[in-house]
Image (cartoon, rainbow, N blue to C red):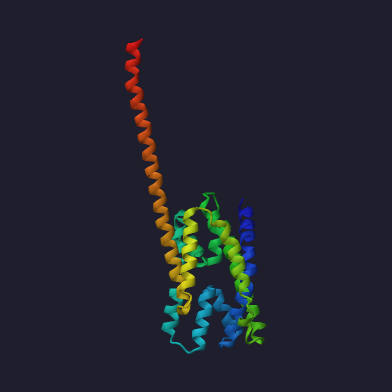
Length: 258
């Protein structure tokens, strides 16, 4: 069972690994151009493990921004991971604190998209699926950064080649099939529209706002669905009680007639 879950986790994350490799490659190349050496660039990706935050931080470093500003900016960009954590919390509460801490470390956009469906199923040992996907993506990310730091630095304008689109395409292919019910559709549409409207905000803050607004819209739709279901159940209950009452009233009359 454990081996099967590990294999399934690696298989689930593989398409996103293919898409993320060019993006991490670019991050590695740009980090060299920003003044890092190969070891620093690789260790940075190994410990930070956050693509969009790394890319924004590199731009701020190149523009000689204060360290506190860089820290706060990347913190805000990564606030969306709080939403991921909240979504996963009820499915991982049975695990120990060290295991949950390790899972939290590797909780990226891609890992969440590839594993949330499996984590919702209360199967024993499902954390091996998550950990396999997480480590597979993590190794892919670090190796790609290392390659980018060594090779990609020879191309000073590599960020303009559009290689990072591969990750976007793979991510869409993973996420779209999971958008099935009405709540998810509303959340996706609202988040998409909000993200487009706020795309001009600096430091990718529009994505953070879009994520929050999308989740809130999905939450309100979920409440609306629950309310409608409750009202429908109440109507059905009233109808059943009404029919029972009518049957009870007609029975004595039939008995007298007999």
